[in-house]
Length: 483
Image (cartoon, rainbow, N blue to C red; front, side, top):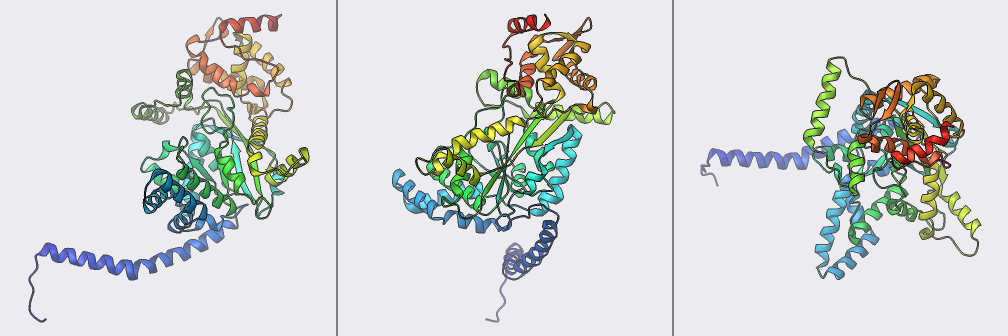
């Protein structure tokens, strides 16, 4: 026992390294984690005093604990057994597959990352790219929402900037949890998104086990009171118009509520967004022409555009991309909606499966009602429906258009129709969508799809008008308009 043992230096260093790791994991790390967690809890307590809706304990749970809770949920356990029987595989193999799905879905929310980093970045980015305007919001109705209810912001999906804009504008209310598609599962972006509380979903997955794990997570988040944000359309609009709603996530949220009405209510807050310049508009319209949702955006092209904007900023020639506006609409309580559906059809009880379709239609109507009317969409509509015009004619037609939209939420920069037209024309001419000929502004045929794309964003607010599909239609509509 007392004899000397000779070891190679590399083996001695390796033994010391393993010993240090073992000591740290058993003695040091738990103490350090406890120390920082106590500081984090105190910081979150101070933060909750400033927020309208405090961060829920569900969001602050450790990711490992949430994964364990998810995979041992009775509904997931039953789905594992069904999947094993259907595929002819051992239960433990199916269980590991469910665990993999849970690890893929469950976020790792960090209050520090969200409020100290993400909010600052989204504020800077939003105001660097757009002139951001927060329009209509029913503050009284928002204040009347039950503080114990689960809040779900539902919004139209125009751009990937939607995530940034809403995160920034809702910062004083609460921390939002988004469902994010496969596009964001790229390191290191995925780590940041997880830290912000977003969860990844496979939008086109038909795997029943995966869908059950996802549905269970959404149920736990909803019952836990986590404030969420979702896009009922399920994806970016390819033509600029509001798309029909998809029922996937909405169904999971409805199913999460106790059928007997016990537990938390769910309150949906409609949000309408619009832009003078959607950064991905060319990609989206190209995908729309191709009839598929495969966005071909090469990273080299994206980086080149970013570098060009940086160069314009450094040389003092940078201009923001017009206006971006957000409106918050009238909240909708799931309990009250269920009661209204029951009153409308007293023949039998209204079940959870009866609610998603009428609920989605109601939400999309409320979202559509509060979509902001901005200068570029309005001018695009006028040029499509009435043909080429001078600037003074556009100002007159804009006044007539706004009179036809008395209940719409219209943003006129500086409360001036003249300045609104000037702003829109400057953007459209700069982008080559319009050209000036003898004092008249004429749409460029090669970019007509972009003109239609922006006009479509307010099409639903003008039900009596129909968008022309080509130049011939535009002439047919413009003739009686000029007479």
